[in-house]
Length: 116
Length: 111
Image (tube, rainbow over all chains, first blue to last red; front, side, top):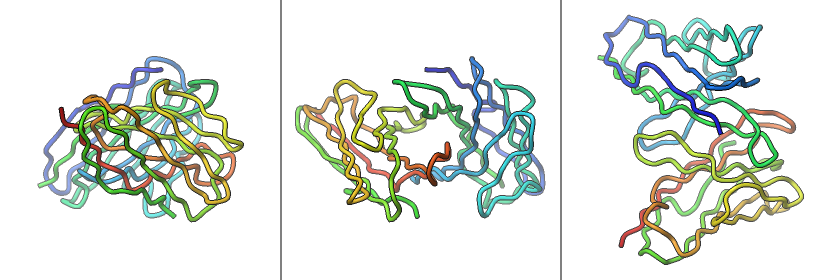
């Protein structure tokens, strides 16, 4: 398994500002993903971070709001732009790697974002 | 499209058994099971592949019924460390790496 870290672990931000969340994996991974999770709820996929190409976004999520970078095989960032209180959530990144002979995802600890 | 899990919550005494179900309205190609403790990252438990092959955890077993588009996770002789919220993840479509996570089942094990 891999170790995935995220920065910051939590933040409180003002409406209209932007926050960039970093995700670092301790080994190279081909696929990285970003999720949003409301407390007590399930995980919702925001986008797939592709190394060397633009991220691919899920329905309901757009690049202008959630720009993503993937400069190499161990690192990605997600920016939450022009924040509103509705953006308050936990944001998780994951990296896909092989476990038990097949591919699955390993998750970072999450970034808890509160927008005032 | 999101898989539905049942039950929503389970309360157990140590040593008791539990079954968590994951039902999909779409065809299943693989099912990934995760456990998430409060304030922590989801942790991979196991994966079930089409054809019934199971890979992952040694003490937790699961089944995969393609016809019923359903998977079940079996927790036997539960331990306090089993407490947490369990999520199933299913592939968004065939041969994709994207997962759609189920509604979740909260499990609490008491001494």
